[in-house]
Amino acid sequence: MSVLPDRRRLGRWALNGAAGLAFLYILIPLIFVTWLSVYAQEIPSYPPEGYSLRWYGAGIANDRFLSAFWTSTQVGVIATLIGLVVALPAALALNRYKLFLGGAISNLLLMPLIVPGIVLGFALYVFQVETEIATGLPIIGSFWGIVFGHVLLVIPWTVRLILASLAGFDRTLEEAAQNLGADRLTTFRRVTVPSILPGIVAGCLFGFVSSFGNLEVSLFLVAPGQTTLPIAILQYLEWRIDPSVAAVSVMQIAVIAVALLVTDRFVKISRVV
Amino acid sequence: MTDTASSAPARTGLTAAALVGPATAVVALGVLGPLALLARYSVNKYDPYEFMIAAVSPENYVQFFTDPFYLAAFWTTIRISVLCTAVCIVAGFPLAYVLARTQSRFKNLMIIGVVVPLFVGNAVRAAGWMTLLGSRGFLSVSLERLGITQGPTEIMYSELAVILGIIAVNLPYMVLTLQSVIEGISRNLEEAAFSMGASPATMFRRVLWPMALPGVAAGTILTFILAMNAYATPVLLGGPEFHMMAPLIYDQFQLNNWPFSAAVAFILMASTLALTVAAGIATRQRFRT
Image 1 (cartoon, rainbow over the protein chains, first blue to last red):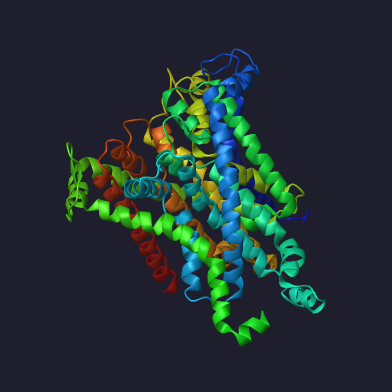
Image 2 (cartoon, each protein chain N blue to C red; image 1 turned 60 degrees about the vertical axis):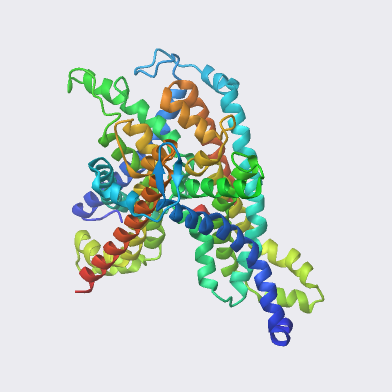
């Protein structure tokens, strides 16, 4: 490798340089939002008059951001749990049985990822309006109305990642367990679930993160007083930009980065995205 | 499984249906039902006083394609999507290649660096661009100090800002798609080409690119669809005078013109699908001959 001809070495430098630039470009928005979050002054003009961490305190103390953060967390956790409960059996069935319309069903389950977020949110909203008119139940703008929308966002991730885990699972292990006297439930609990756990964990984390960061679908489903964190950030930015919204953004980036680092311990992220 | 499958196929079918049923029902109820309802709305008529009047009329679709304002938004969306997708292919390939081939122990960390922005949300990333591109932002002030420009450079609230923003949003998708495909291409093939005297450019053109083509196609489709559907980036970086399709849907919804908004939603989905399919056919014909 050390005696590469000059032209090839030059080519390698050019390649690494181009790759480095693209990598930097992807991170530029995150770098600048982090930088802004430690500006001392309120107006986001460069160069900063100094640096300060006080905006983190201001961001946390802002009631709108705080309650939006809680709404997002609650919606994300509940939607992920419901998504897992329906997706796990579905993935098992798709993996093990030759289902009538099996291909169509697995495509259907991935559909929420393909339909534009704005269109999905709008469609869900009119659907909820019609359902509310027909049944008289208070659905529009309700907590469970948002959760239902987010369950749709979680299902494609959980189904996809659990299916990927199942594809690499050796079914003779289940037969061995049953030969040794385990009943079906025990086999499932002690053999199947531990083997596909990486897929389950990764599916849940990706589902949660995509629910937590979702803007377009939530935009149609929230009630005026109750927003999710991405909507709170969007509405703030439409009005003004200052270091406190940057600080809130950095905290969101941190939450997501930690979630991804944890996922990476269970399953290599490079293999699931 | 064997005992039930052989002795009672009906019961197996029932078990399978019970397992797959809930998820299918949720998605059918949450996606297919609402989309069908939206399609029905899109042929209704709108009246400022009576809100929505049941009808079966192509009026909304005709209005869209005959009004210069909406047509301009339509072409802007397509133009920006094509441009951003092209840039993503060119800029994404080297990074994907390096990520796929690197032996570095920081490989996973680099991949997380590409993945984190994906999940951070477009509003947060738009805040970063605002800091960089604003009239008193880093770029404008730096250019002025270096004597390249006089007075502030205003890039925010322009088509250029939206393009820069969408490229940053979509590039990770392209990189990750290409990277997984390049990892599946054996390094030996490249070495074989080199050992037979191919230059890196020839190797790329004759070996790497043709083998990576399925990944390029998948990444292109994905980034193109994402660009067509972009919402937060055009709203925050383009400002109120800039119009793309997804923000148009939300604006019309807020103006209470649901039938027209629904029609725009279907025009967006149909044109995205049509362009994706057309590009697929064109590529296949070109590479067959």
